Amino acid sequence: MGAVRPSIPTGKFVILNRINTKGETVIHLRYFLGSYVKRSTGISIPPSAWDEKRCCVKSSYKDSARINAKLQNLKCEIDNKLLAYEGEMNKTVLNYILNGGDPVNEGDLPDESPTQAVTKRTSFVEYAKRVNDLNYGKKEYGYSLWYNKQKLIEQFETFLVHWRKTPKFALKDLRQDVFDEYVQYRFTVRKNTNKEAINKSLVPLFVAIKAAITNGILEQGTYGPIAESYIETRETEYNPDLEDRVVEKVRFLTPEQIEKLKDYYEKCKNPRSKEILDIWFFAYYACGMRLSDVMTLEWKHIDWEAKVIKKVQFKTKRLADVLPPLGNSALEILERWKAKERNNRFVFDLLPEDYDMTDQKRLFMDRNSKDKTFNTSLNVARMTLRFEFPLTMHVARHSFAVMCIKEGMNVFLLSKLLGHSTIASTQRTYAQFLKETVESETKFIRNL
Image (tube, rainbow, N blue to C red; front, side, top):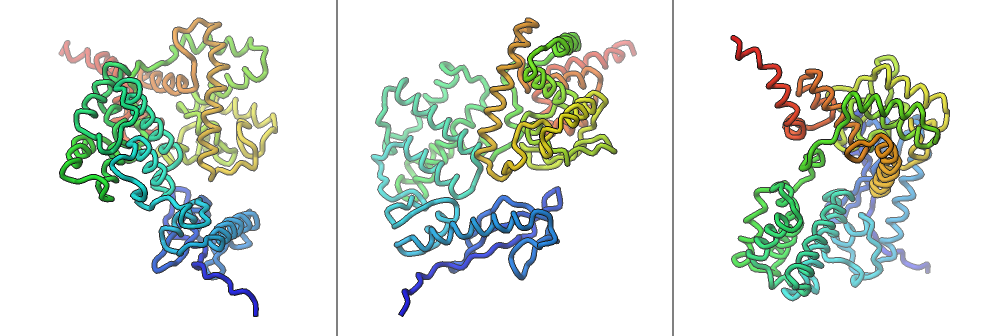
C-alpha cells in the first residue's frame, strides 16, 4: 500500500474583480481552510483575459505562457512548504506560509499576535520591531513603509541607549514621561521642527504598545493612555503626499541657472554624465516627473500622437488626473533615446527589459541606488557651475513647479500635473512662491 499523502488545504488562482485605472485586476492565490486565506501575486490582467473555469490566463492573451508558468511555480513552492510542515495546520500557519514564511514545525513560527515568549521584561525595541515585521508579513503595508518604520524604531533605540542611558528598556518600563522626553529630544537634539514629522516618528512605537495591550501583555488601564495620547494626532496609513512635505527650503534652479546647465550639457565630454543630464532635463520638461517614474517609464506609456504620458505613477499607484503633456524639448529627448535602440521596454535603459515590476523590495532598492548614482554625477555639474545647493533629480521637479507658479499657472492644475493627491500638498510645499504670486497679482486692488 502506498504512502498516505498528507492533507493540505486546496488552493487556486482567482481574480476578485477590483479594477484599477488601467482596466486590469490583480490575480490572487487563495486557499480554503474553514474560510479563505489569500495573497496577491502582483500580476494584473484585464478581466476578459482570465479563464474562470481553468483558473489561468487565456492562451489568447499576450505572455499567457510566461504568466501561467510563473503562477504555477508560485503555487508549487507554497504547496511544497505546506507538505513539509509537520505541525498542526491552521489559518495562522497557512497565512504565514502563504506570505513567504518557511516553517518546518511549530517552533519555527512567529506569533500571529506576538505574545508567545513575550513578557513585561521583553525589550520594548525588539518587540516593536517584531510587531513591524509581523504587520509587513501580513501584507498590511509594503517594503518601503516597513523600512521607514524600522528606521524610526532604531532612532528611538538610539535615544534610549545614548541619551537616556537605558539600553535594557523593557515593556514594563513604559511611561508617559519617557515619550514626553523623547519628543523634547527630537526637538532639541535632532532639530526636528515639524510637529507632524515628530508625531509620525511615534507611530510604530504606539502601534507596538497597542499590540501589547490587545494581546494581554500590558494592562489597558495602566498603559492605554500612553498610546491614545498621540495616536489620534498622526497618520497611521501611508500618505503619498507626505514625502513631498518640505521642512527645509525648496531648492530650485532659476531660468538663468537652467540656461547655464544647458550650456554645461552641450560641452560635457563624459557620455554617462551627459545621459544623466539628459534624464534630468526630461524630468524637468515632463512636468517635474519623479525619478521613480522616470526609471520605470516604458515606451508603451508614450502617446506620440496626443503628445502625453499615460503612466500609472509609481508613488501614488494611480493614473494622473491630468496627463502630463510632452513639449518639444521633452519629445526631442525621447526621439534621441529612441534612436539609441538600447532598450525595447524602458525608455532610459535604467532597468533590464525582463525586469519584474512586481518585486517591490527590489524596485525600492534599485530606485535608491539610481538616486545616489544620479545625484553624485549631478553634483559634479553643480560644483562646476557653483550652484549654492546640491543638484539632485528632485531639484528638477521643484524647478518645474516654481517656474509654473511664476508663469501664473493655476495651483489646482499644477497639483494635478505634479501628481499630488490633494491641492493642500501643493500649497504647503510651495506656499512661499504662491504668496509672492498673490501679492504681485493683487497690487491693482490697492489702486481701486
